[in-house]
Length: 291
Length: 223
Image (cartoon, rainbow over all chains, first blue to last red):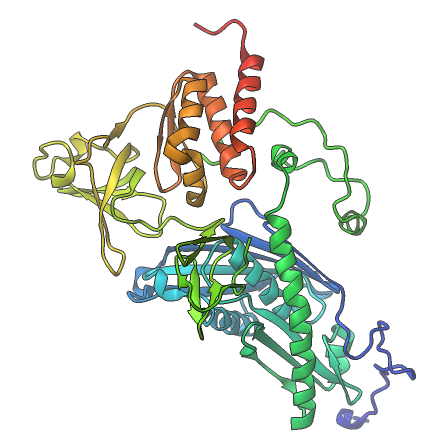
């Protein structure tokens, strides 16, 4: 017999008796976030973010000549964005290539950045932002946007402020910050937003599910509060990028080392502990970036 | 060091390059070093593309030929034509290939940039020329002032210690020519300057790098 699936009672409990969530967070708590700037050598600017289970890489090129030519705007630069999920970023293989969802996300992200970049300084050019989701765990557009704005600053693109983004949502009737995968899948609503922290301007706002006006206002307060914390992490990533010492530079750029035997997570957790570097191979000064 | 959106000054100060004003306050527009001079606040960017300015000396690579002009890549977002009348030669119409071919590297100047950033180049200046041989390296255009330094002191240092001929373009391209080993050492030194532009004691570090590199490579020179 066919069951009325709409009315099966949900068995998933997302909030524990003590008010904590499945992963032990409080309703207004973020997942752990780590940002690193300048991780790619070929791009003009880049950043990598780990946000809970999300791993996202962002790269920025430009301003550079816009192609195709008919897209050029004689008065200002274009801000173009491509959000892409790796086939291995989710548990079922994601069919590679742009789909309805990623085209939409690319559009809203490029519009968010469009409003902070000083586009008039670079007529006829384009600023290209690439966001690659390596591992997804809900909130990838926020993670991508947060990383991309660090990459944009790293590329030296003039802009009014960094953009910071965080989602809030409702699970089991409680408004919570920064939903993870289970909460997103089985919760009631998810509402990502992006904020220009200095002015409090909102440059991206979407909602999936329903929130009452009061719930929405509460969600917004949570997201704005998280944005100020993320803003500090972004600024810190940029500061760290440009305060490397002479030794770091001199030992930089040996070609990829043999893959370490230990687990990747461990390596990332080690948080830049001093480790004896293998002797430098003779530096190839000619091949890499000739003219 | 300032980050985009960071306050860099209050009322009474004027916004210079790399900053913007909003409600009487000044904010950084770019990631860079804050600099204040005569009430003008500017941010010297740490990174960014080369945007042509009138009068800049640049090193370009010829990418295309027209009957009366060459298209030159000057490492900027904008294509830069060099018209035959701006070249140091008397070029017959359609005879541009006799003087510069695709792939040739030239030292030239920016003749004009208009408001929609249409660029024109000229080779009428004294040091403008076709650069034969040697090698070209690229650094971030924002680091060029450090490579040159006050009255060209850094450049003179590298030139004297490596006996290389060096031309520096404002677009971040640097042309070097000399003995193979010396060129390699000079290239390494310039990379160091580019990457450590904000460091204290940079001149000493560069001198040390060149001297130790030269000591290492001394020995029977190939004839």
